[in-house]
Length: 364
Image (cartoon, rainbow, N blue to C red; front, side):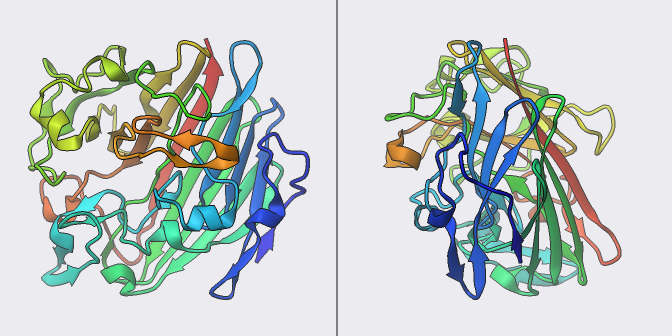
């Protein structure tokens, strides 16, 4: 069931008819969210992909600051299948696509070298969600992931909401999930941001200025699986506790940056208490003056600098070359099911998974 508000005359230039298709007896659609300050977000219920986020620069000029597509067929066939989508059942990598839970081994689909990535090739990013637009600034999505889907145990019922604030330009993402069998859950949003605005070609994010509220990160091996170490950022190019541009150190011959072909690492967020909603990161584009703040209840945030983007075409002829986006994926640590000393990603029957992540936009 889809309820949508009028989508005509939107800032993004997207057309509803380009997003209407029947897939496995479910209808895809376009949803336009607006707040009282003029921010506009366009999404589809296929993978809950965010198609555009229209926010002003320091001169009041609006641009789309997230990489997206302009038709449902392009979303489905994107060279980057996770482009600005919702990720599940497990965001990030699980080593060799295997984990053991309460003595039972589970095998997942391998889709990233020797590993399982982002819930597998038919994870939550490739599913049609039920969607209801509650008001002009809110859309709620629901999906039931069947027991055994992509190898994960338990029927998982997921509710996710995109909601715009009216007082500030902020996109709030709220997740809830329950299961009927012990399982692992790690949901995230894989927004590919560029605060300069997408273009042909979209500029790199090398001059974006980033801070991350983290003293530690999880180093990776040559196939991007955490070694299990929780390492200090101090004295390394991984340190964003004070502002640095993305490009300043990204090509340093530092082993972690070589393994990731740039930044593709989980930061262990400094928290006053576990599960509290706190500022995780900031990102600023000096030319446009746009500033994005990331708040989350999660323990980690994956910094990814679009290292594998290859110049493919997105919405309205924009192209997305390497490093033309930055991602802040709020999540549990990668490969947590195989790392008992990492904070647990296990969800049990009777418990509820909850997460809030906020992307807040302003100008400086």
